[in-house]
Length: 217
Image (cartoon, rainbow, N blue to C red; front, side, top):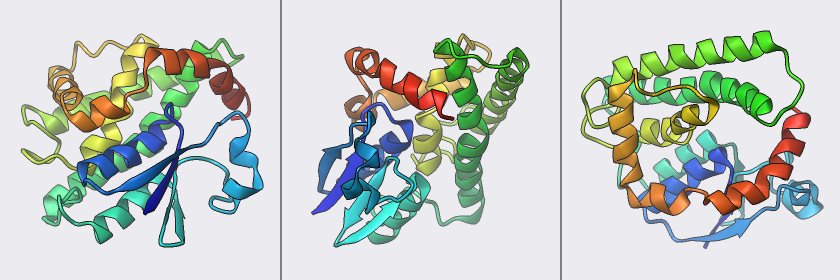
């Protein structure tokens, strides 16, 4: 059975978790304690970069969330989460990459501020501005459609959906983005998102570990 190594508070791991549930792939969940367990030899042998998520499937170890999602799509193509139609594929890939390469770094900066870490105020301002630019792009892309590519739930909704809702946590209002707000509500009704959402107790318990990780980035 496929083994899934994750931490409940990790957005990167959550997108793999959601995909496993959406595709109804049997898996063995293995929690990695980010307070040091990721640095131990057993996990380092699976992911030498020492971070979650990772999977092991038939002795094949894969890490990096998008690489895992590509693998799962290729091996378990139903339901289809990566569109084959070219224009929809382009949208799905663009939303996914912007989420990971633009939105997530901005969120990292804002998380450092939220945790009370020493950070240049100019960097915080730039992160807020960048986040709003990205949210507007997402708003324009989704328009009044249920999901980014139309009526079909895809990888774009999974990747962006694990990041966009956190904007409110940083004091960034989603009110100017009604399409995204409706989309977030729609995602929250999916069983995969409900099942993988960290509880307030899990988040509270993880705060010291999150702060320690933020201090090293």
